[in-house]
Amino acid sequence: MRFGFIGAGNMAQAMIGGILKAKLVSKDEIIASAATQKTLDAVKDKFGVQTTLDNQEIAKADMIFLAVKPVYCEQVLREIKDKLTKDRIIVSIAAGKTMAWLEEQLGKDTKIVRTMPNTPALVGEGITAVCPNEQVTDKELTQVCEVLESFGKAEVIKESMMDAVIAVSGSSPAYVFMFIEAMADAAVAEGMPRAQAYRFAAQSVLGSAKMVLETGKHPGELKDMVCSPAGTTIEAVRVLEQTGFRGSVMECMKACADKSRNM
Image (cartoon, rainbow, N blue to C red; front, side, top):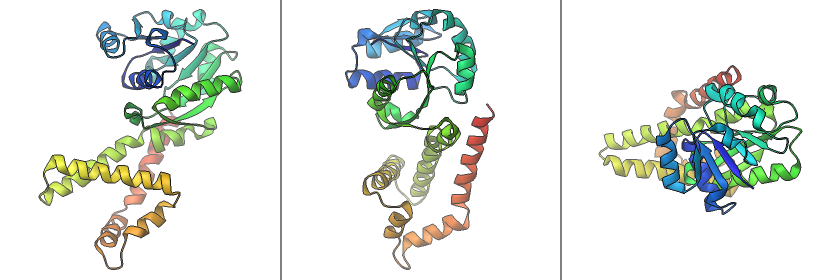
């Protein structure tokens, strides 16, 4: 199977790296396009894959990843539409571009999988939501998921959940980075060197997330395990509740989902 990438930015590179690391195909079976030769040269130097400035060349691949910004999707799909055959699988990672919109651009008989990965894919810890249209067979869906799981986890969802996915995983790394930065700033204010503060804050977030995933315990139960009576942690939790921490997170995610729905 030959993989093609229209767009060769960070997310596409994370996917290419995962595919090669998992040895799903050889580097000769991957081709990527981009708007500039500079980007393509960097991708070729890093991965050794084939590159082209012509998006129509990508249409010859068996599985085609649409990895451009949403604003460029219509133009790109118009370029490749007439070059696609019925057996090609289109995998879109464009936020806000619904299955109905993609089918309108390419035709309802096109095999389309709408996905939403996130940037932790760059370190092999991403999670990707997957939504196929009716033209995609179970075998083809399994193949797509195998690719997506080469750089993290993948779960098939209903398309109606996609806006929630964008809020809870697609965009959420930004919230987590802000949280880590804020914790590190506070540690620096207490006298800790900044580089060390980032390590302590980031490792605490990493370890806490791993506890949720591996223990199966409710996050509230895990929180209670840290909160000793009259202790330091419950005092910190009291301030977070007082300042609307949970409400702020929920409101920011609602705004994110609303923006996705209206794109």
